[in-house]
Length: 345
Ligand SMILES: Cc1ncc(COP(=O)(O)O)c(C=O)c1O
Image 1 (cartoon, rainbow, N blue to C red):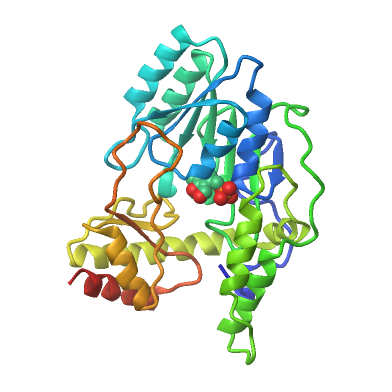
Image 2 (image 1 turned 180 degrees about the vertical axis):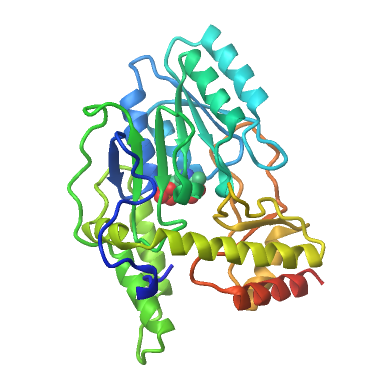
């Protein structure tokens, strides 16, 4: 994502939606580093087991594996949400058979928010002595509300930030201090270049290779380092309300357009769902993604098949994520819809 325009910045500093009263917040560079802090903190000499979603991004479990945890996948529903029944059954079995700590890594994907059933699941797991981590990466605009012991999120997936992630919760001395912050992560340079390119400045360098190099740099380390000073400052002035509004409007328009061409949407927007992306089901997501990219519309697939997870849900190959964030408007949504329609034809 390019550096944000002035219209999505507030004049004065304010707290972001994920900074909740009386809850401790530790901010680091990546989600992987946030999870590494917890993998390190919660592990015992005898090891530990983490129950993880059967459908995920490998960077969610890599820190646990590298800290010696055993990962056990739980099932996801057809809507790619946590299968409560399966998690409960696995938690019960593990409580009987495991000596080490058991952690449940839960996640509401694509913008869904916790409801009473989700909160009841969290409470049941805690009552069985599991530690619950809730991954809020896809719902940073509406963070909290799950009752988890810790919450984490990676921020650069939904916000115009070069780096940034957090762990929320725990006691004051619970989590160790990350390494000292860099003033500015190199991803900012790529984001600034992209901004200049979009603003039509002549002689701007193509930011693509800078993005690739900076992403690689950021993702290769799971040694927790404090969020860069520039990202921390940027967080204070992002206009979250306008960004959320833009997402809801875009997602609403695109949901209608998808309905018109008969494509199912997994996460239509609503009062309790600000989509991270609009997720559609199409027969061969990879082929549609490639065809859309040829027309200049770039749609991520969440996620490529895991290289680390054993068991779990049959990996879906029919989900494609369409961008609906603040950079776009309803005209862009119409273009995306026509590109997807043409890609499917
Ligand atoms: C839901 C979710 N949580 C956590 C992570 C890890 O975040 P990061 O890439 O910042 O390490 C990812 C990465 O894609 C993710 O999709």
